[in-house]
Image (cartoon, rainbow, N blue to C red; front, side):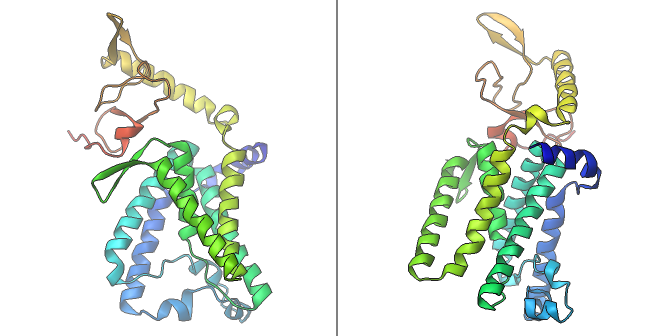
Length: 287
């Protein structure tokens, strides 16, 4: 997407790095507010266009604070961890600017959906950011379809299957709302999915045209040199071969499967590289 490339060259320096860290902070703020003053969210922070017209314009921003309480702490902790992991993976793949655009465009689209609902019905509905996080999950599944999640911490399931199940739930939800003639409830679902479809499929080949291609090539050369120095080798047809990538857990390389993707772990002490299957499940190396 040439427009996005131009925007990145012009405004990329203003992108917020580690955006999901601040999203987790919002969860903490919401948890504190919901525990200390449960009704404060609706009276001060929730999206209410009638109150916005009276001058409470901060509601156009503060509605993104999650409305949770201490009773939801387990759910909040799991959700925050999952979204943090997925968001960081997307930011590493796309870069801070593109991830910022994707995340904030999802919020803006949900805000527009609520505004359209208000214009048509006169009712202010605070948009659920669950749809924004849902589109993040779809983007993650599209980028890393074979990554496995442990359901109930026991059952390994590839993320692509979970994404299809999630999409089926969205479709069923749309059908149910249509059957109940609750057409307004469809708007945020459709708008959120449109954000994913437009952004992801329009930029799926961004690596070929991104200005970050030069940085990627430089990093690739550094990895090649590091591999030669650290014994990044494997045996291929009886010969010792220097590989570009090698998982520190399972030992697989790009020679085992050319579809494998590898990433370095920023939390490990040293240059430890992992395949996507073990990137999020390995134990961090600390010296």
